Length: 93
Image 1: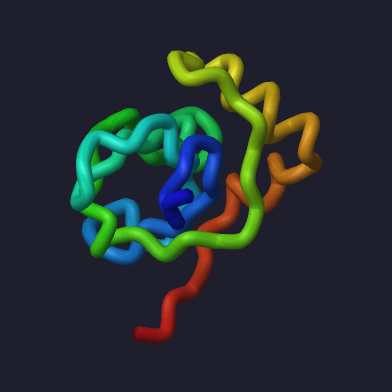
Image 2 (image 1 turned 180 degrees about the horizontal axis):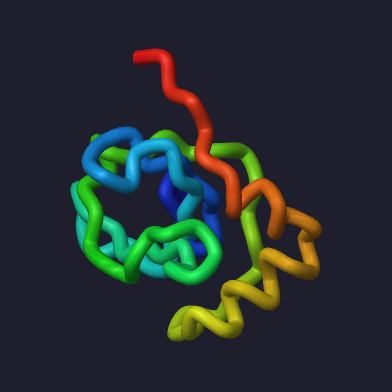
């Protein structure tokens, strides 16, 4: 079992999207995962991301392996995390 498993909610720590929440969709290899915000919710586009640029949270959503942004947004809404995804987190690094 990996720390960056499918459905794991993470915080982006680097780049222009730093402080935004995202969801891991798929693990590509030992260093990269596919993440999405979704963009209309948190501003994070669907893209590959280095795991060194992510901080995992303890929350895991139940999503399908090939989930689109609408399905992920619905899972976030069902978990009651919509407002949390719309706000940025202040990082103290």
